[in-house]
Length: 455
Image (cartoon, rainbow, N blue to C red; front, top):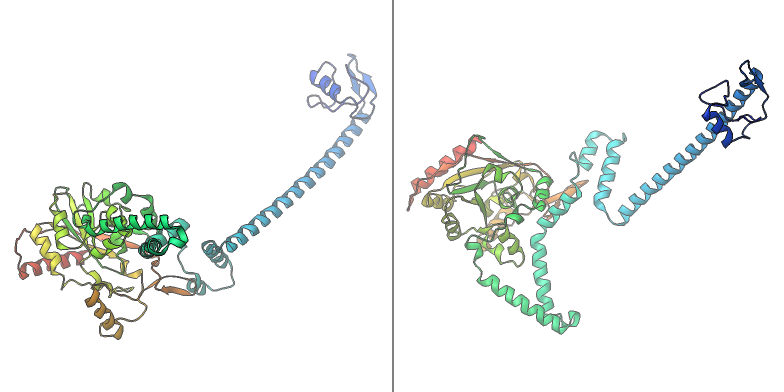
């Protein structure tokens, strides 16, 4: 069964090829001419064997062939690794170039921030001033925040654009489409004019309030909700009025915590429905009002608040008593509150006999720095107070989020990233007084102030 040529060496029998071994036989059959001719000898049992000299030459030849094969494989592996490294470098260059070509500023910020942090060319203090100490938010969080804080101007622009197309858009969209759009807008505007949902408990949608959209907004800052006393219970068979402080520029913490169910509101207050109170003028803006109504927002008027509290136990109205006047004092590092002239808030609490809950958000005033110094008595403050008395709106000249050497951009509605920690105080049970006196109101104010100091 063994031919006269040297087959591949058997792994089972290193020195002796045995014809009776099936492995030797198969290897011989597969490659009978793999090696040089070999002289065979027979031992006492008649089994053919190789001489020691031929065996040494065969081993040397096989080792040489194996080394050559290993060098060939190493060369192939090295060539493939170089090719892979080249492809990865080209892919990285293409990705970076495409990011810049797409005006992907967000990706460019991440790239530059990581590069300079890893380099040793600049001092740590300079890097903190240029690129900041906090990490950049995720793209989804930044997108959601931009949409939310540009939502009001977007809705106003959309209203003006659609109205223009309905009135003068025949050359652009056709006369039929223009008349149809005009009829739809006329019906919608008439509905807005006669609709009183904002004064009658709104149109809240639990699914919309708990959307992932608001959770992304929460993580941008982030916003955290805590009780001052974890053991305090808020039974669902009571009526509540929550007083949120401070107002800040836009009351971001109030919106994220209580208007949009983005934090642990349902866990801390099971069975309680929250209604955020805002200016009635916001419900006159088309499209924007629909978002507010689905979030459960109501008008801040006294009749609207009384209506919600009259719906029965388990309802809570969230109000920012400081209002527009308190917004003018919102600046980083300040904690100025406006309570002395806010008697209406406390009067309704006494008339309804509710549980009054004070709230304070640490970090609310740090979101927007003022663009100009507007302390009491300055020219800027006098102009702001003039317009506040005229139109009822505060006109703070604020700065929003900035980038690189600009720590803040004037007029940018997107706030700076700063943690907001909202602390909820213990509820104050208000006696039900149909006609509270000034002494009753002042006594309740003192109780609220004491509770807030304990927070």
